[in-house]
Length: 81
Image 1: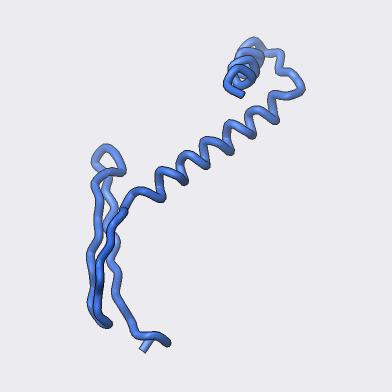
Image 2: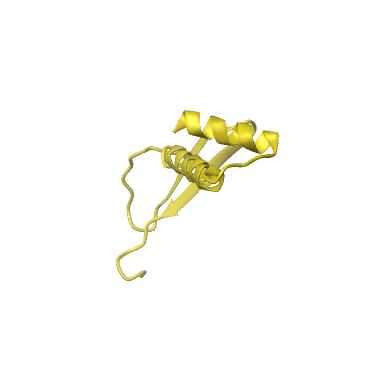
């Protein structure tokens, strides 16, 4: 698939796209989305216990650059009471 994407990109750059270009570009976009989602699932990987009414702060600074992620979780009883 990588050689096909390179060929499609070359055709686009030359101004003569072939019939498979749109399919290949869609596949490339789909793969890029899947890669972003796979990375996003691993931003915070932690395990903890908490009691009803307790709030836990979980965070990471691994997003990149000067960006981080903080999540506040508050435990509630079943039924939201």
